[in-house]
Length: 80
Image 1: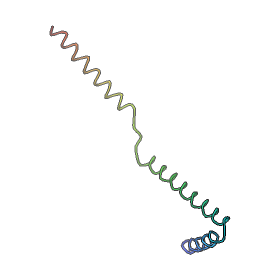
Image 2 (image 1 turned 180 degrees about the vertical axis):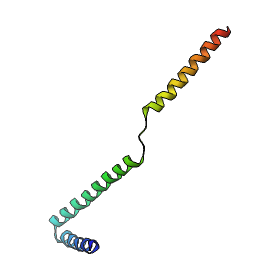
Image 3 (image 1 turned 90 degrees about the vertical axis):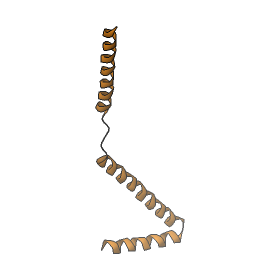
Image 4 (image 1 turned 135 degrees about the vertical axis):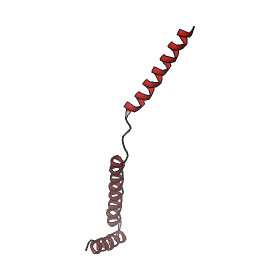
C-alpha cells in the first residue's frame, strides 16, 4: 500500500513540476526536505554507533609519560 501511495505521489509531483513554476517550487522544497532529513538521520546513526572520544584516556597517556620522564630524570640525578 505504501508503495502504491509513493508511486501516486511521485506521479502527482511530476505533473505539478511540469505544470509551472509553482510545481517546480514544491518539488524543490520536497527534495531539499528529504536531503535535510537524510543528513539528520545519518548524523543520529553516527552518534549512536561511533563512541565518543574520552579526554581522560589522552590525559592518562600524557600523565604516564610525564611520570616516566620524572622517574628517569630522578634516576639519572642519583647516578651522578
